[in-house]
Amino acid sequence: MRPAILLAVAAVVAAQGPTAPSVLSRGLLPAARPAPERAMFRPRAGIVSGYDTSPLTAASARGEGPFEELDAGLAARRSGERASLRLDYRAGFRHYPGNRRLDRSNHALNLDARFRLGRRVTLLFRDVGTSSAFGGPNPAPAGDLSAGFFLDGGPEVLHSRTLANTALADVVVALSARTSLGIGGDGFIVERQHRGLTDVAGWRARADVAHRYARRRTLTFSYAFTHFDHTRAFGGADYAVYAAGHSWRIAKRTELDLLAGAGRLRSAGARAVELDAEIARLLGVARGAEIYRLDTWAPHALAAWTQGIGRGAVRVEFARTVTDGGGLSGLARQNLLAATAGGPLGRAWRLVAQANARTFRSLDTILYDSITAAGGATLARRLGSRAELVWRYQYSFYHFDRGPLSSFHRHQASTGLAYHFGDRPE
Image (cartoon, rainbow, N blue to C red; front, top):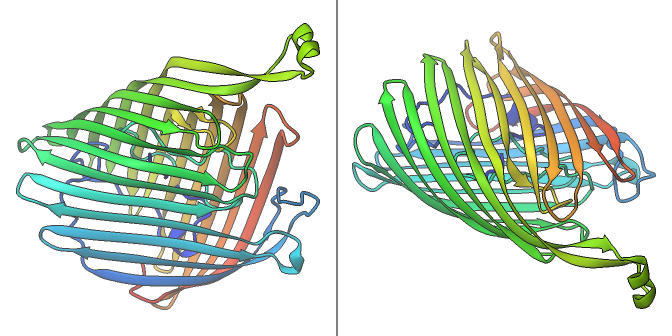
């Protein structure tokens, strides 16, 4: 499970833009060798003022209003001949003057450690954690779906804090110069403070084989088994995914990644039902609960295209998979289309734009359909070697097939100043 693309990230992070195409060392999977990256320790901070039209808070009568926000972060890198360490932390603290809205904070932590145990064996440890309230980071498009289940926050529509963490461990063995074997496992947990929403916890085991059959083409075959439980409701599920992938470096800065497969989902849970009229008169209640079981196959697919342009890049992704239901249901079938583009506009300016659209269809617990869309842009103007002036705008749209908030949208516009205490971003 990978939490993954943040639209409402700290401005100093968003201004850095998308990454260029990755080396096809293992297709859709992370590179086995530690990256030859110089040591770096770069704290950053920014002050932002803006306006938010988000309609949902604990007191829904409170409407739109201005806000002040402190954005902070830390990027650290350390690489050696046999090990590398990468740490990224982002945080945002928002205050609404006059008590018109609930204040909030958002945090995201990504830790990646890689160790070469020999010429053929590499050990990888990763940990991804987030803490967010409504209006915070939107989950990212899946950059790595080959391992199976994709952890996604879903359509978070309530002003309620969500805590999520995934810890991963992998061993990658180079069977030959062109073929490698990866075996890994991880544990995950998602806790939501709103008692009406569903929590989830579980574990996953996975394995894959990658073979580079040409200089710029790689085939992958993967299997993953995920078990998870809904910790605030009766029920749980097992999800097994079989998939094959193909990565193709079409040109020096153009890459196409494809993955296709199927997942078998078996789950059980309890749901409310209307009782027969005669039984309801005898029992004195109109509704009851029934145990249900689900055994179905679901498609699992990913297509990603990355194009480097100058010092910037464009990335377009499509994913169809099973994901977390965002607390409104246990699991959901999701379609996702996302695009990210960015890069420098001259020596002093940098632009990043992002957009994504999702459809959800719940598979268990509470049946509902939803459509969400989001888009935004960040424009940064470098002031000297360490400071940046930042402007950003974000738009989100939510539509649900039932409930009192069937359709609503929100806008956020802000401007601020960011300062890098280390070397300026390239």
